Amino acid sequence: MSDRFIFTRYRTDCYHCKQNADQIIKAVPNQAQVACENCGATRVFVPRSEDVDAAGLLTKIGKYPVWELVEEATCRNCHTTGPHDLIVSSRHLTVRCRNCKFTHFYKFDLEYLAKDELKFG
Image (tube, rainbow, N blue to C red; front, side, top):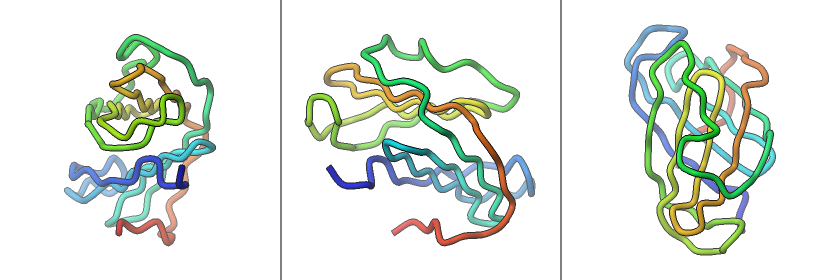
């Protein structure tokens, strides 16, 4: 499996600069990030657990709206390439395989405000 487990973007208002901009989402086994393409505000999430789980059970609602996305990815558990539920909240991020229900749960770890090379494409 490549390091690019989930790599996508979601257009919404940035929590930091308040501009409507692409939020670049990258999730790999050892870390997940959500970065604003406009201002560079980046939230870094670290893995907390991996398990077979019911949808949404591990994601708690935070201060900001929860993003519920579906992305194509190759599952680390069943090795099937197919749809994965991607749930992003202010404090948690989960990626769940629709085929085998294997779930990666990440917890918010730190935030920084510098633009880096996390670009889509």
